[in-house]
Length: 253
Length: 257
Image 1 (spheres, rainbow over the protein chains, first blue to last red):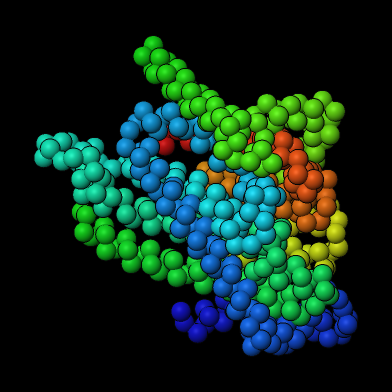
Image 2: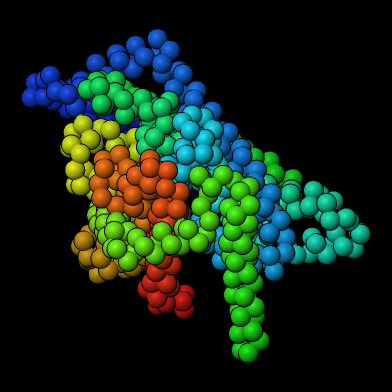
C-alpha cells in the first residue's frame, strides 16, 4: 500500500475520531452515552492492565473456538456422509432447509434452561450456529468431487474408508477451508451476541454492563476492541486459507 | 418429462420421511424422558402451545411484530446498501476514500453495537430498527460494490459514447448488471435482519417472538419456547424461500447470456 492510498484509506476513520473527541469535549461533555477517544483508550488500557479485558477476551475466544470445533466437526462429518450419496442429499435437504434458517440466537433462552449461564451454554449455541453452514458447504464440496475419482477407487477395489481418506478428503480440503473461515467469522459474532443477550461473562457482557453502569469510555473502548478482534480474526483466517489453498490445489491437480 | 416428475416426487417423499423421522425421534426422546421434560416438551405439547398462541392471537401478534421489524430494517438496509454501494461502485475516488472504512466496520457484530445504540438512542423501537438496518447493511452493500466491479468494460465505453451521466449509468447499466449479486446479498441481509431483530427484542424488551421466547424460558414453559422457535423457523424458511423464488423470477431475463 502506498503512502498516498494509506492516507486516503485512513482519512474517514481519523475524521470520525477527531469529531468524536471534539464532540465529547464540548457539546457532549459529561455525557453518559459518549466519551472522548482519549478517555476510551485510557479505559481500554486500564481494563487490559487489571486483567478484565484479557479474561473476557479469553472467554469469548474459548467459547467461539470450542463451539466452532464442535459444530464444525459434526458438520464436516455429516456433510461428507450425506454428500457421498445423491439419494441421502436429496432426502436430507428438506430437513436441512427447514432447520437451518432458525436463528441460533433464539436458542439462548432454551440453552440457558439446560446448561445455565456460562461456557457450555455459549458453546452449544455457537456449535448449533456453525453446524449448518459448514454442513451445507461440506456436502456441496463432496458433491462436486469428480465422479471419475470414485470410478478409479472402484477399479482399484478401494474400501469405502480408503476411498474417503485417499480421494474424497484431499479433493475437498480447499473448500473445507472456505467453510471453516465462514464458520469462524460466524462463531465470533454469535459468541459476542450470546453474551450480549444473556451470559454473565465475556466481551459482549462487558459491553452491556459498561453501558448499564454508565461508563461510556469503557463501552467505546471495548467496542473498538471487539471490532479490532473481528478484523484480526478475519485477516488471519484469510491468510491461512490462501496458504492452504495454494498448497493443496497444487498437490491435487 | 414423466421421468423427472417421478424423480422429484421420490425426492419430496424421501425428504418428508426424514423430517417425519426427526419428529418421531423427538416424540420418543420426550416421552421416554431421554431428555428431561422440563427442557424438552413433547411434540403434542409444543403443537398445542402453538395452536393456543395462534388462536388467542398472542403469538400471531408477536410473529407479526417480529416480521414487521425484520422487513422494515431489511428495506432500510437494502436502500442504503444499494445506494452507497452504487456510489462506491461507479467512482474510483469514492472507492479509495470510503471502502477501507467500510471494511473496518464490517466485522463488527451488530449485537456489539447495541449497547452503544441504547446509550445514544435509548430503549425504543427505532433504536432496534436502526441496529437491524446496520447489521443487515453489509451483505447488500458489498454485493452491490462487487456487482458494479464486474460490469463489462465495453459497456463502460458504450456509456461514454452515449454521454450517459453518472446517475443514468447507475440506473441503466450498473444496477441491472449487478442485480444477481444484489439479490443474493439481499437474501443474506434478510437472514441477518431476522437475527438482529430477535436480539433487539430480547435486550430492549420490544414486543415480538424474541421476547416471547425469553419470557417463556424465564417461567420454564418449554412448550411455549418450542412454539416460538417453530414460528421463528417457519418465518426464516418462508422469507428465504420467497426471496429465492423472486430472485429466479427477476433474473429470468438474464438466462440467455
